[in-house]
Length: 380
Image (cartoon, rainbow, N blue to C red; front, side, top):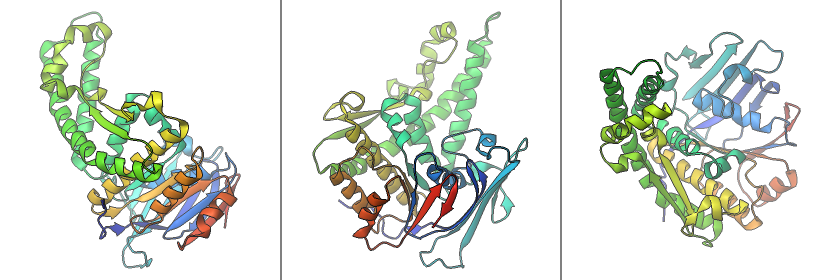
């Protein structure tokens, strides 16, 4: 089964500059158009390099939403700059310069080709990106919020209207909750109705877009899991939403008295979830560490394929942060074979084991560069 569009353009990060970002004081990296490997012990800064790349795509850190906390200790500011091209030949014809800078106590300035964005949402999707990280196990072990964020991150990269609907829904949801928390007087019923109608209108939009995304993702995800696992297990994925119980406005209003008692909205698309199964049983209960890791990797690779076909047909960057731990040699080999194919573009890998990467790259004809990271210093 072939899910790939072969004419997708590859977005390549050919140069990355980092200044005062987390534990990295200063670094300028000339990167391979295919595979870039960052080697070092835990806590040395490998993941911070990947996080800088993530920031240039999403206007925020993957692990810390508070911008001031990514500034290196005792420094007054941080700056990131990426030089991108859509050509594997590294041509100068189509260069995108993306930069962000921020001083403590001021707002950040995010620019494309030296022109500052008026709204950061305008940038999301320009440089599609998928990251696979150890924290992805929270998709299985964590709350429904983690799984909703998964859908939001992917859909937002190819559908601007989704971001707007999500913002409208979140605002209406917050306003309704404020009314529900009122203690001394009963909330204005007309105002309550107004926010419920806005929640329902925006929520129906989010539901339809999430459903379409999940329906298309499922067969791609299952195919990836089968290839990585060698067909040893059968996995499932399904989308659960309060919208499946009837018109969303009716669902939201159905338990208004109970909502008033608890002080928050019990129903709506803010409670949507994804159900993960292994051989028909909940993944959370049945999966081993290796199976859980295989599941989330297959899920992320399916996202990669989805974005490649939808995000202006641009091949996303792929960030693989310490993904080989807890996987047997056969599954590692399958993953490397998959991401080394022409279907994938530029890849960034972190690992603590140089021998491990040497073994992976020894039989590969890929162009690659290896960087050594120690105490925030990066050397070739």
